[in-house]
Length: 150
Image (tube, rainbow, N blue to C red; front, side):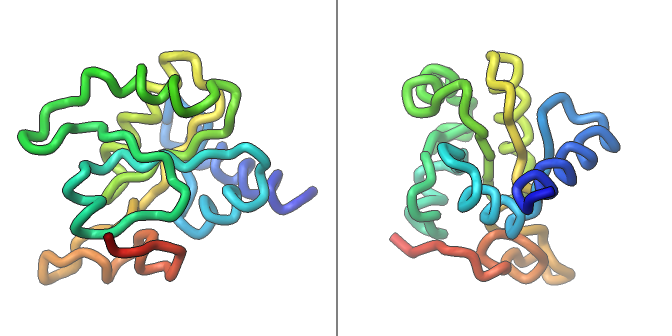
């Protein structure tokens, strides 16, 4: 089997083992590899504009807030914006700060008819460490994957 097939199979196994309703769950490094290997794959960053501006962005990611800033209220236009920017037939990976909002986005997109939704585990910044700080335990940035500061 090829590398892409192996990565997607591993992601599917994770989803099945934890009862996720979407296609799969990928680590940041795996998501980056899938993005490089799968023609037409899209990475959708669902963090707020403030997070994108102040913490950092992923080059070429589609940016659609799951929660709006300020206030943190759910974005009522999320699915409309997703449908406008991402083909429902595409392999779609969702990422947020830690993996929680992206899980919700993957669930919502799956319910809306997207068949190949994946959550990026650990998110952009990873979990908090013993000092309540992020970027030390997992995450896109900690993995040394492409990102830039606004």
